Amino acid sequence: MDPTDDLVADVFARACPSRSTLEDVASKWGILALVALAEGNYRFNALRRRVDGVSEKMLSQTLHTLERDGMVRREVQATIPPRVEYSLTKLGAKVAERLVGLIELLEGEVPAVQAARATYDANK
Amino acid sequence: MDPTDDLVADVFARACPSRSTLEDVASKWGILALVALAEGNYRFNALRRRVDGVSEKMLSQTLHTLERDGMVRREVQATIPPRVEYSLTKLGAKVAERLVGLIELLEGEVPAVQAARATYDANK
DNA sequence: CCGCATCCTAAAGGATACTG
DNA sequence: CAGTATCCTTTAGGATGCGG
Image (cartoon, rainbow over all chains, first blue to last red; front, side, top):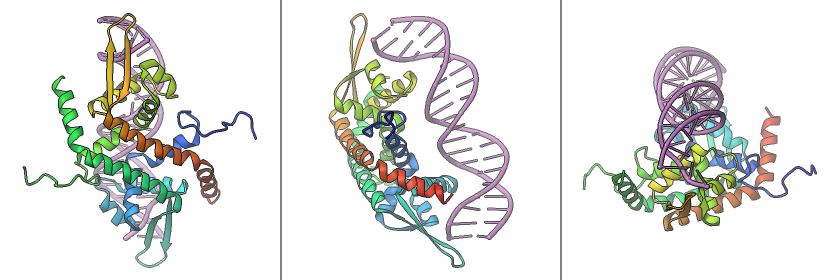
């Protein structure tokens, strides 16, 4: 092994692969895609409708990145019209589970966050 | 209550406050700041050293956003030179706990992710 | 030491048009 | 339906210099 390699994965280190993976799964659209797929499989346009506001370009790009990281599986059925089904891999499901937990926490804290923002803004 | 308000927080909805909060805490530097502060309190420059690669500007901006959302507390001691201590609020600590879980998962899966990437790239 | 203000560049992201 | 390609705008983000 190259002695310059980090022996432990450390997300605080700029070059650690865990950091780039984190950026992929925690990106604005990455999170929502993973969490949507945790509900069940989706086809491209259905997923696009589920994730309010995502553009075709960004969803496509996001799904490719997640597929490359081994989080998302892409299955093409060569029918006419074409069907492409997206689903989570085992790893993707584990990650999505964590993200769902985070989101549920935040959804429950919406009033607290709004109150904090109002206070902060009031003090300028 | 305004009948047009959503009755439940829904992160999939573009306008839901949970979505903007999610973007704040799951942003590239937001995650790392929260996770670093979960280790203990930090002063500005110490935190900057802990989070490898963050610029002064981005750390400052990130901390303000997290403070506004009620995740981070900022305490100024008017000494010379000035001391500014950052710490997590109770809400921030709960969020950070989830993020730590996610990061630990990803750090453990670094080999799997690297293998997935290699396979993907090999098939071009 | 802890920043903010400014300027500037690079990257993210949206709109549109087109293809298998 | 499921994208890709292009163009263009917006935002993120780094560098630098100054102030409390």
